[in-house]
Image 1 (cartoon, rainbow, N blue to C red):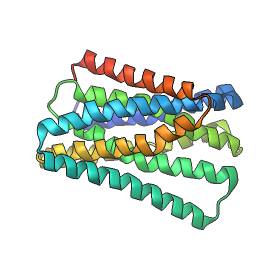
Image 2 (cartoon, rainbow, N blue to C red):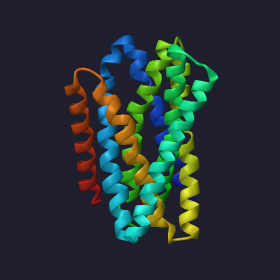
Image 3 (cartoon, rainbow, N blue to C red):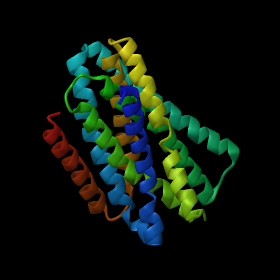
Length: 245
């Protein structure tokens, strides 16, 4: 199977994993609200370890400290600017209440799935054994609770099960696109590999610190969020050990 086709299928699988995250909301109904802290924590722990182990450390191995710092700064700035633009847009549209919450969650997750796609494509282009499988698995796993986070405000806004599933899945639509773009860029210009790793790491770490952790720790009881963080981080560390990453 050609590498590009395999990459596209892998990134599409991570996208579909987000739709799977809507299923607990459909099955559990309002009881799913109690899981929000643990689910956000799970996503935060998973993404934090994946960002450092699967992206930042390979970036340091492949490139100079200047490249890594520039990539981290650019990735973090991308997420912060995109988040600000989403907030401004929704404020100007005048959306209110639960519908506005659903739109904002969808838009934020849609924007931040692009750097996740870039991470997949960059890892795929790397020659480090096991790295691509680790990054794909990490992003696929953390996409599930993100899908749940998308579906909950949609349910509260009155949207039906199929709309919850489709909306959750579509938040990750940029992942296959970003994966192909990053892979093509790195294949053409190999010096972009450490910069691309660092960009994706910076974006994902800012997402953890600015979005996922605050959302997780805002829920009560906090021990659920802490438990989710520990489980997510431990799962990624174990996966990394198995794959030798």
